[in-house]
Length: 263
Length: 326
Image 1 (cartoon, each protein chain N blue to C red):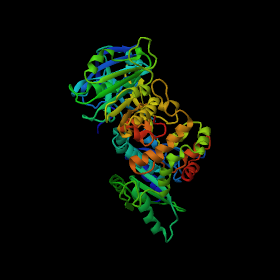
Image 2: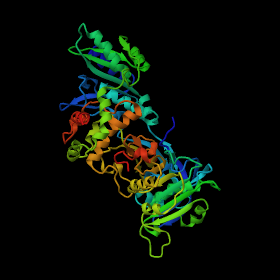
Image 3: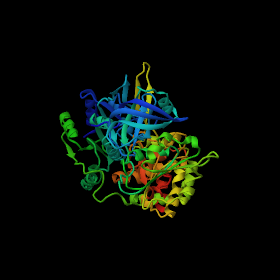
Image 4: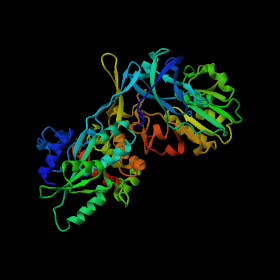
């Protein structure tokens, strides 16, 4: 019988510091194929496991994958202390990921660290895309922007908007909240929207998008929860009659908007 | 089967077949459960033990793996055991666990090593007895999974014996007892479907969540988690690591409770179930909403243990009535 709790051993092959407390880890393990939006349970023996979105390209099956980790607790502090060549455990990929739609226009809205799974969507795009893809990357301060050096690479495929809530005086991007910025921009026609960020962002942004003519069924959000098993058993991530780990973490907005406590 | 013969059978399983015997016993007026040293101490009253049998199917803390120098070593073992005295409530709960842990290698290993012996009371032997027996078989036993089931005939020191598995039949025959009826498992749900009361609760529970009675329940609930501890269907767990001297790490699966403060906490401290009201609602949603969606039957067997242990006197039967009438 297959053991879903048995982790694989991965080796850290690259570490990149992205901001004061966020690092990008490249992990080499067994061949992995995934859909952007899926997650892995990353662990260090002795420090437990936690779910992290995969943020690398899903285009080719590879032995390498990337996760972006903010130092906030015991496990993530331990992960931040690891060096290239050291080992971690991983299980997965788990969950459903963003819908794989290759021809519809896309709007990606990332709030803070919510950009992480969306980076996987961006990096997985084809070399030449015949559709419009807008990315709204929303942060509190300019210092919070991750993947700055990938800006040019992203802009070859997508139209990138930085939305900064409290920028410095000379900041050239958009100021304020994404709900205000969306009003000012001519959005792609008939798009799918993928959103990932702090939960309080979802309802107002979805309402704004609806007021701009985007249908609820085309809006998808990714949810964060505590997860232990990753396979819909341990109950930590339950919402209503669903499990974020198994039925999500990506949900159609219409599907979860009325579930008490979901967003 | 007479009472003395039943005790002899259990003794034979322990001494000749080398099973560990888990059974109810009486202590300070309470029925408790545990490993039995002396067969004569087993309680045969069919009274419901305070705790459920779940800790003998998945221990409160058990090993998933050991890490030894970057190797992941499987290290989960249990002794072969007889679990005697499971009530109809407890066997119904086992139906749920059999579904939840259908693909769980640890649970399945426990099942392979466990002989499940149920027990319940039967009404007195009367001319109607045969009819009752038929109904009991059809309505109840056919929908439970066990190896052997003992129906205690009221007022007599004897039991009607049913088998629910080939293993159960074999072991009884080997012991030298042949007067049993075999019951074929027909799935957890009766032919006529789930009970109306459960359907109604499932329909009403979501719209009931903002009703006033939940406020009151949330106000008095201490979020102590005792209900989830004694509940035969509750199975939430954490995965935790433990360091041993010398660098070995044990990765364990440990019982949890959705009432605990950190149960829904994510990095940074945010809690999705912030207060007792949210937690007790989640507890009820799991049993009466989520499980029905997943498995088609209900996640509560109405054993009442939660009401018995609740220090705030929250009574599941009252609460279910309120949900129905909301």
